Image 1 (cartoon, protein in one colour):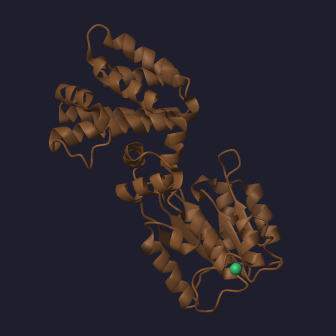
Image 2: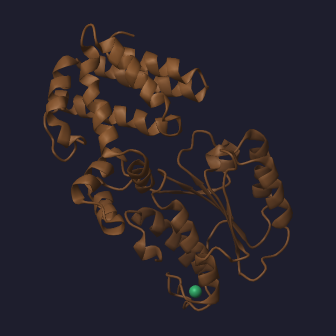
Length: 332
Ligand SMILES: [Zn+2]
């Protein structure tokens, strides 16, 4: 349950261990890496170690049994806070609460641990307020910021945190984890691990919201988009079907990308059992790969990126999806 149970993050754990061993834990850490790769779990193990009541001074793992460890495990410790986005955003009100509450010393722990999840979802106003907190950090507080990308974080915030990069898991590691921890059949786990690009969180999201039938139905329809004259009708039908999945559209767009990536691999390298994702749809992959040139494949990837950007701007989703699938069929 402690650090030893966190897979594939040797470098991040080494950085944390080293700082702890040297007694140089900063006021603020920034954990970066793909969603679900263990940032939050690691932050919580660190919170336990820093507040553990019985661990020996030279033991890196928390005991997991003392009162403090147990409270943190059950999310009832008064000095370990988890701040998450409310309706997609970390808001100014949440940061003002933090400013007010961190003025007081920790209630029972040695150090208060404030974990801010998805820090990239902080709006400008909240970020400015948070920056003030980081500029004059209240004593005995450790802020742990978690982010899946650096793009939208204010440079002034970045410069005040010690960055700890978390790596995506290798495909075999993630497969192993899905089989061991979630009892998935190895074949399905291998497929999901490929689709999730090393992110356990994404693998579980895919497992929960995208059935194998849905995956096959969408992907096997793609080569038929090029048929004249039925392709256009098929494109509009798929768009309409996907439009009803609005909550999980991002997963479907990623699925399309993974298919195009497979096609590119086949065109450029040939069959590679370790790297291809949709091995079970070999006939369809072969058929589709013969229809598209490499430049056409890149144009298709670009069309998906554009569709995603348009959806983010709330452009009429059905129209955007129709345009995407007509483009994928070479008719856009
Ligand atoms: Zn303990």
